[in-house]
Image (cartoon, rainbow, N blue to C red; front, side, top):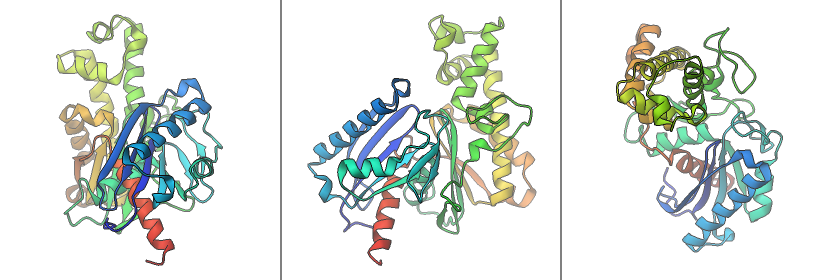
Length: 332
């Protein structure tokens, strides 16, 4: 990612939990940065209003007008039709299905805008500036394990997008055919077994069934207030129920990782997202399960590591995508 002489880009990461916006310089430096909650339950129009507001804030902080940008890139959770700039489906952004988000943002700011899946953008961020930077890595798979689970693929040193820009929906590969219903409508998806909302769901169901755990105390005595973070905290305190929930999620994550290893044979799998903050409690058993289930040669080749960026992989990767597209259009 060497675009030091480029105008900066305005980059946005729109997820089911939070919206992050930043102005990013050509060398990958963050000039200004803002974060706010998505609050998707307030409806699509309210989310768009918040999105525009945080974009205006980072432009103001950077003392830039939209005309001074190389472009805008929006990294969005969901199945993205990149050719049309449409969010075709987004399990964690209900109400956004069918929205022409690229054109809406371009019209609001009067700037060339790109729409990309958030995990694909994060893959670029980790490839250029994060876990893969400085390594001889040509094949990388990024997995975000957060509210949902998404993925991005670097193959032969290039972002692999597929025919429509939809490649990388790793969270929706079916791991357990008779497993729990996923928000996407299928059953047994990796996301329905190992994501943040899946961990919280399992904890709530066990507590409602009479399970004894410190999870409930840590959630203020309210089952509906239980989150994956609550479960992780209880597990660190030695709570056996919480530890089992995380062990189950780690097992299914490992099975998903083994599938990735066997299909893509990458040198590096990078795991980011909120659940990665659980660290080795989640990742060590997931690595062991992956190594056990994967074929020998690709299983020995791959390294499974935590992402370098906790919050900004998608922001930086989306900016890199905008810079690359600007360069292509200029004939560079």
